[in-house]
Image: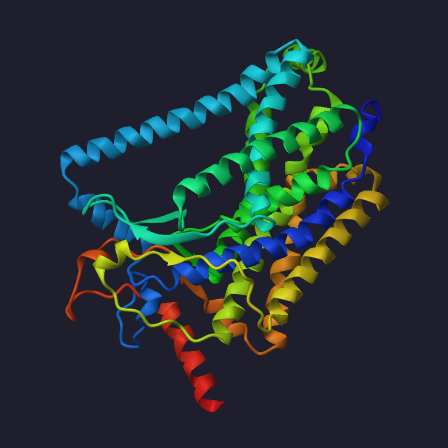
Length: 430
C-alpha cells in the first residue's frame, strides 16, 4: 500500500499525540482517586504496615500453592474456563487476521470496522464524560465465595436507581457523539481525532490496575520485552524465509497481497489512532504510578484494621483532585512531550521513516525517553531509591481475608517495607 495513494492518511498525527499529554495527566489523577479509596480499605495490606512483617512469596510460588490446594473438580473448571477464554481470543484473532482481509467488498469492510470503532469509542467517551458529569461511586473488596479470589467492586453511591438513569443517558449521549465523529470522519474531517485519542488514553490509563504494581518490575518487564522483540522478530523472519516456497510461490503470494482489499481511508484513519497512541500509553503507566508515589510521600498512610467483615463497608471514591508537590510526575510528562518531539522530527527528516509516528514502533523511543527522564527527575529531587522501590497492592492475597490473629501471615511486600521505612526516617528528620 503506497502512502501517496491515500492522501487522507498523510495528515500528520502530531495533534493526536500532543492531545495524549493532558489526557495522561487527567487519567493519572483519576487513577489516583481510585487508589486513595482502595488504600483506605481495611483489607488492603498498606493499611497496617509493620516493619517486621514477612515478605510476600513470589507470584509464581503463591499461584502454584493455591493450585495444589484446589480439588480436582475446581481444577477442571478452571482449565475449562481457560480453554474457553483462549478459544474466544483465538477466534477473534482468526477473524481479524484471516477473515477480514479476504472480504472483497470494501463497503462490507467499512461497515464491520465502523461498528467495532463505534462500540469501542462509545465506551471510552462515556468514561471520559465522567469528568464533566461526575457520578458518586464507592469501592470495596468482594469475595463471592470463601475459596475464590478477592476482587475490586466499584458501585454507585447513594440512590442507585437515579444513578443508573443518569448512566443510561450518558451512554446514549456518548453513542450519539461517537456516531457524529465517525460521520464527520467519513465526510473528510479529522478535527475530532485528538478527542478520540484523548478519551481512549484516559479510559485505558485510568482503569489500568493489577493485583500488584511495582515500578521496578514494570520497568524491568517492559525493557526486557522491547529487547526481546527485535531479536525474536529477526529469528522468526529467518525461519519463515528458510521455509518459504520457491520464487513462483512468492510471486503468487505477492499477487494475492496486491489484490487484497483495504478499508476506506476514513476507516483507516480511525484505526491508525491506536497505532499513534500505543507507544505513548505504555510508559504512561509509570507516569501515573509516579503521581501516586508522590502522593504517598505527601500524605500519611491511613491506618485501618485488617478485618474480613469490612467487605460490607465500601469507601467512597473522591471526585476532587488533591493538590500536592509532584515535580517527578511533571518531569515524566515533559519526557513524554520530548519523546513526541523526537518521533515527529524523525518522521519529517528521514523519508524512509515517514510512517513511524502512526505505528506502534514509537514505543522504542517513548519507553527509554520516559523511563530515563522520570528516573533522572527522581534522582534530581533525591527520591530515586523510594521511587524505584515503590509498589502498590490493589488486591490482597486471598489469605488476607481468611486469616486473623497475630499468628497469621501478613501480606506485605518487601519493597513496601523498605519504602515505609525510608518515609518514616524522612518524617523523623523533619
